[in-house]
Length: 582
Image 1 (spheres, rainbow, N blue to C red):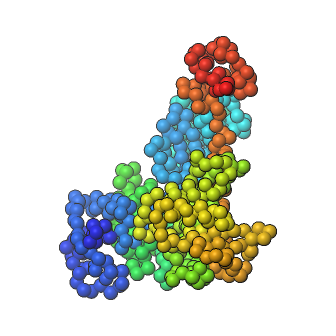
Image 2 (cartoon, rainbow, N blue to C red):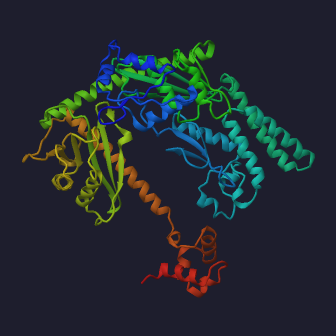
Image 3 (cartoon, helix red, strand yellow):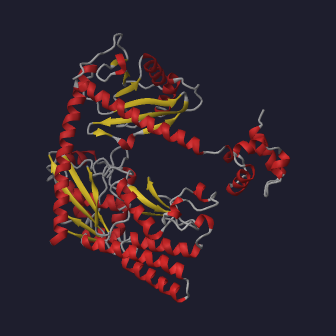
């Protein structure tokens, strides 16, 4: 369904499309959201698919692309941690991963938190001895590291294991992470027997130790109710707040869970919210073998086919449960109810704070979007600016942004603040993305720079506020410099408005500082040799070994450099020029 401007405002699927569409215009709609949607509809577009699974996939893709105003929406949360195995490499690395799905390698998960990922990686290192080192370290090793000494890595970096044998360990690790530990045990046992028959007793002993560790892990899984891989999903409502709780069970171990709060779900039926959640949550990720839910799900058969479309296994959506599974669902329901109650209290608290801030600043209505900016650097180096966003329901972390500041004199916070706001408002913000209030961490100077940037971009109707630290930089003594007012504003230390400003300011400072530290650490890890074209890892390593480090390399002449194997005269001249630019 499209509005008069051609924007997609609703996406739906039905076996009997005529009946489904007619139901919206029969005059029987009672909830405010459906009536508002019907009034806004100007056109309807129809796509006919061959199968129900194709229709579900199309519905998922259209909702993800257009984010329609009247669909129940799951916030696009990329913060889940995963395990990544770089299978595109000859000797794959196992690592902690966050972010969008990578184009190469395999990712497994998601996991509910970082601790569960690190615990699983630790287990995989113990069982299969896969490397976890960065590629730069891997390609420059001349002897095994501590991980090999404590039997957590087979040291492929120095050739202590063949690519074929390492590949078998990677395949076993992937099978184990998918829950197929029985086949892994069988595979390791057969390799141990073959090694013993060929009198390679050292290798057989390694497989024996690996087999014992696998069997011990299997015993732990049996204690925790078998090697079950499933997600448990339950829904609860508190007023206008809907919470969907997801608990994750992998290999029989309950790893924890996370609560989700779908948008536009306040007046939607609970069954519709559950269906929309399952479609959007599992449509873009690998689903476990079972999904346990607390209610009957419409389109369960079609959704199961969609989630299992990779052909490897069928995904079962189950709601008639007994025994352990029933108790797990009851636990998820409890988590959902608690999450809904907490979010409802949070929204009430944030609403009160927003009302107090509106009164303090003399705004006509409660602000719907507040943005706060801060700048972080060390003696002017590695300057990073942050933007954090607060909405009616609390922080909008998906809208947080960092800006690497360039072409600004070191330590010039005013110019840095002017640049970040010019970049933020380079284009006219879309409806709903325009802030009502912009907070600047700083005093009159930063506020003036921000006002100048907004004026240059023609941004109007935004209330600018500078948050200056008070006497002794103690919390509660902050001074607010409000654009358009001659006198600074000092709020009572117990004021709800001041508490909100402090929370947003501290969050902006934390976010900027984390970005600055990351940028500084990245710069420290880089070698000046990385900038030389044609000088790869092996040649860099050869130079460092030959001259004993960068200091010795810097003292070397062109003729000295040419003596190193693989270094041509033109390359030697570029290396020499790096250290003798003057």
